[in-house]
Image 1 (cartoon, chains in turn red, yellow):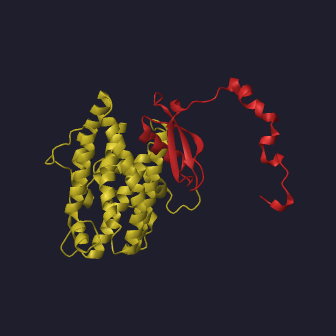
Image 2: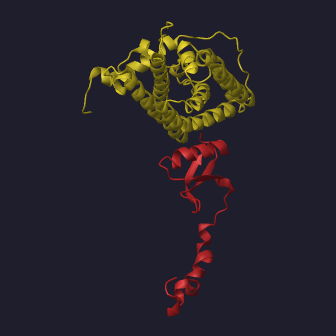
Image 3: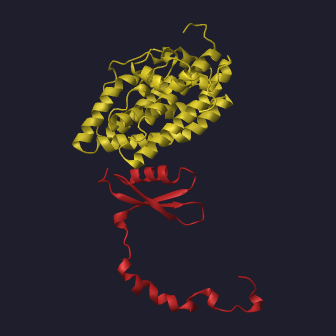
Length: 93
Length: 258
């Protein structure tokens, strides 16, 4: 079973929420991955929907690129809504 | 069974068959705990096993109420000997290789699925509600075991050969599952149990469909079949299962503190 491909598992916990990555399973095919994911990750009523995706289909950012990808946004506080002062009339948003 | 069998007697007998088959297959699957071929499969197998033990408890509890001789559900499970057990011969067969484990599961799941689909419509509310809960679990068991039969059958040369061998070896235990005796006929006529002819036809239809899709050859329908479990004549395997399963209750009857 070491040669079974890896699948990433995403579970939606409630209607209206998004699917969230919860872990991975080994499986010989997509149906088995779905069944294994159901048995491993939703046994305590964690979900209403499951996605399984072959891990090989995921393109991930490289840790080496962390600085060029993410550092530039650190000093751009104006991109956060909290940077702006709301007029009193607006009240709570 | 004599003609004098009442509907009540038939029902008690039938409930024990349902409970015993669930219990013994659950026990068999639990033997694989810690030894399954992959972590994911282990979790799945134990889920199925515990579903079955849970269903057994529900059927035993109802049976104990109807039998009404001071025996509890636990007494029925842990203090009856092999000749009193009424589980199908299929479920007491050893786990074998994984093709056997899944072939046995598939043959039983197919029978279980159609049986429960009928019992959910039973006028007896208790039966209908136990069956409704079980039916959802078993629908999933059946999907899983069918997929495995297809995966092995339509897999490599070796997996195909092993699956075909498992199907051929287990086939002789399928006959009694779909062959109604007096108990099942009585319950069918009383509007409680499944229509035996329909059940057999549904079972054969599904099994043929899955085996064909799995590129396996269904064994001949007129093959010689083992019988006897419905009157307590079991294969040699059941005694060993009970010896292990019932040990604690036999050695320390009514022990309250573990």
